[in-house]
Image (cartoon, rainbow, N blue to C red; front, side, top):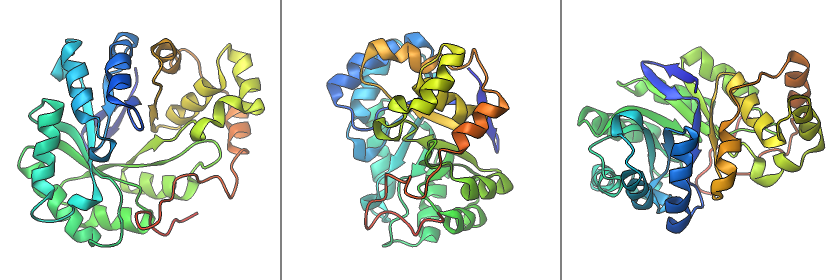
Length: 274
C-alpha cells in the first residue's frame, strides 16, 4: 500500500468507502476488506452506517492504530449547537475516541465557509480528529478554507474519474499542498464497461476498474473504492503491482468530457469551476 502525505497526514492512497451501503452490507464486506489489505475507511454522518462500520471493524479485531478513519459532518449540523455534538455522536457510533480525518461534507450555501472552518478547527483542537479537510469545495472555497484554517487542510474530497479529471482543481490543490481524495472513481458504473479502459486493462491483465483506480493513485491522489461484494474486494485492492505507461495515462485523460460530472445536488453543490 502506498501513501499520500499532506501537511503531516499520511493517508493510505487507496481507501474503502461505504457510501450507499446498508448496515448488513457493511458488516459483511468489512472483514474481506481488512483481509485484502484495506486500512483506510471512509464514511459520513449522512450515510447512516457509521455504527455498522465501527461494529464491523471491532468485530473483525482491527487494531485502531493500524486504521485511518474518515467521516464527514453533514450540512444540517453546521451550527454552534450541533457541530461538536454531531461529532461526538459519530465517535460513539464508530466506537473510537477520535477519527483520523474529519471533513466538511458539502459547502452548501446557508453557512459561510469561514464559520464552517472555525467549527472544524475547534473540533481538531478538542482532540476529536487528528486532521481536518473539506469535501466538494470549488477552487475559491478551498483556497478560502486554506487561508482561514489554523489547522492545515489536508484534503479536498471530490468527484473524480476518467470523464471528470478535475485538472484546474488539481493544479490549485497542489499549489496549496492539499491532497485530492477522489470519490465516484467508477463514474457510477460507467468505468467498468468502458471499452477503452478494458483495452488498456488487457495489456496488464487487469480490469477497467483496476485501471481507473491505478490512474487515480498514479497521479498522487487518494482513491476511494467501493464494493458490497466480498468476492470483489481483492480485485479493488490489487492495483499496486503494475503501472500505467505514459500512453495509457494520455489515453485515459482523453476520455474527459464536458458533461462528465455526475454528482451535483441542488442546494449543496457550489458553482463548479468546470
